[in-house]
Structure formats: structure tokens, C-alpha cells
Length: 160
Image 1 (cartoon, rainbow, N blue to C red):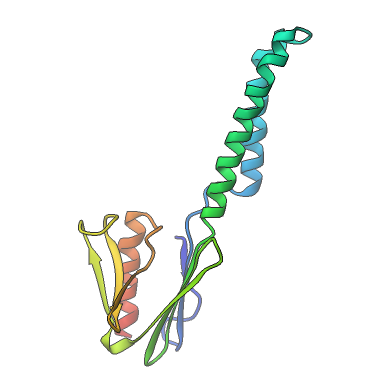
Image 2: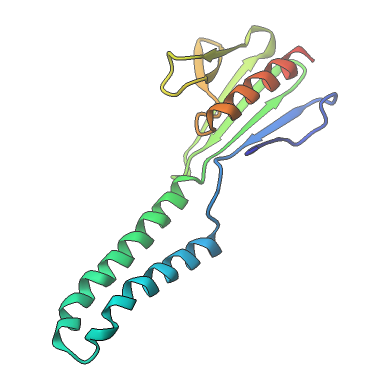
């Protein structure tokens, strides 16, 4: 699961750290781009020494660069972390976006409600925390099964 309780369940404060799933690490991305470049170059082997190769080469390189750029952009977009800290009295949620912006939310634990929207949210099983006049999402980047599991774990943590 791309989230983890970093403190023991019975201790205070409890800390939950969430991050997006990273299925393609940097080495895997490099291997993919190199493999793509190699496979694109195989059909051009018969064209070696002909002027047609020089006409095709910019388009082939543009295709490889496009794949590399898209993978790099996706990697940067996954640099999101959310940290939920549960004290005896307070709940603190800190979200760090890929742009470096940090958003925080604080609330008294007693007045906080955890809501799971089955179908009404932007994604199925949308989990929110509501308190102090604000409703904030948590774990929107997780898969459906992970959000259901997160909701159950948050319910247990709030009861402790």
C-alpha cells in the first residue's frame, strides 16, 4: 500500500504518510526509453548511408524525446505526499504538492468527521475529513481498494 502508519497504533501522536503509487522507478524509465529507441532504430538499419535516413531521423528522435518528456512529467506529478498526524486532541493534515506548495488543515479530533462518498465524489470511494468549517480530501491519488482500506483504518484510528 502506498501509505504507512509511521508510529505504533496505541501511541500518541499517530502519523500516517500517504504517497502515490510509483510503478516505474527511474532505472525502469531509463530502460524503457533505451528499449524504445533501440526498437525504433531497427527498421532504419536498411536506410544507413541513404539520404532518406536523415529525413526520418528527426521524427524518430522527436518520438523518443516525447516519450521521455511524458514519463518525466508523470514522475514529477507523482511527487505528492500527505501526512496526517493524530494527537490526543488535534488532527493535522499536511499536503505537499509537486510544485512545492504546502497546504495544511487542523481540527479538533472530537469534531472531525470522516466521510466516504461512494459515487458522489470526483473518484469512487472518495475519502474526506471534515471539521472547522472545511472539508478536505485525503488519498485521492490512491486506487479504489486502497481508499476503502484507508477509510477503514482512519475509522479505527479515530476511535483509539
